[in-house]
Length: 186
Image (cartoon, rainbow, N blue to C red):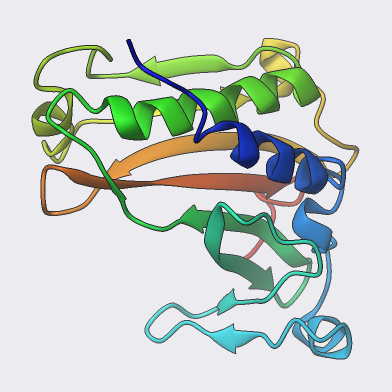
């Protein structure tokens, strides 16, 4: 029998951050780099990725260790990404899936039920091995077309399970896209 006791503190901490969904983790959609500096987020450009910055958000969730924003000269912040640390799991992936499903449940509670997509069937004895395929994906998305409302200036949220080069290690990304996403300069 699997226990979810280790996941419960994650849920409590995530609730705090989700309460600020119109400004994920306290990062306001549309902020400029200068405004983030004024708010002590210490933006640092990601080498080799123009417009992407590591930041220290005002309201981080303990489960996430890295926060990255994409900033447009015209629209300011239009992508907010948060990443967990690497999570060790066995071939069936249950350790990382437990965390993923707990986060998904909290997102569902906040925004309505999301849509799950994947090329790999969770619960497979070789889930993690299958996820190493370069075309494999496993994520849940909250989007207005699915009946979800996140915030006035956010059109999409996605929870994405990613696998490292080592089959028993993975991490989870939470991503928010602003309503200016399609207009922003890539």
